[in-house]
Amino acid sequence: MASNRFNAKQTAPAALVPAETPKDALTAVARHTARIQIAALSAAANAIAAWAQAADRFTQALGDELLRRVDGETDSRELIVRAATATNAHLRELTALPSAVADHFDRRREHAPVDE
Image 1 (cartoon, rainbow, N blue to C red):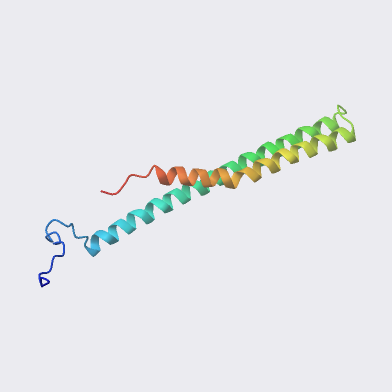
Image 2 (image 1 turned 45 degrees about the horizontal axis):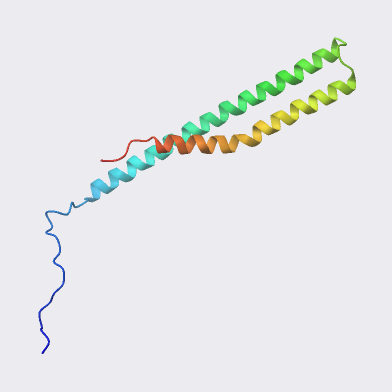
């Protein structure tokens, strides 16, 4: 005849399982949110700075080429070729910018201290 005893695993006493209070959960969410916001603001600042530097390099290159043309050092065709080269380099920099910003965000988020 089969036994009527219940052979289920006994659960751990409540004292051994740490209970997370609503306050603890809210604190953890607030910390996580703050870390994400800091990483996002840092990445945005990095993007603006990188964009400004790329724009500065582009305007300097175009300005230098225009001055060479005005001074008679280059002809019109050379000006067009060099301006196109500067534009191409600028567009490559701008195209690489979103990836660099996303990498910056990920690095910043990964280096955040871990909750206790």
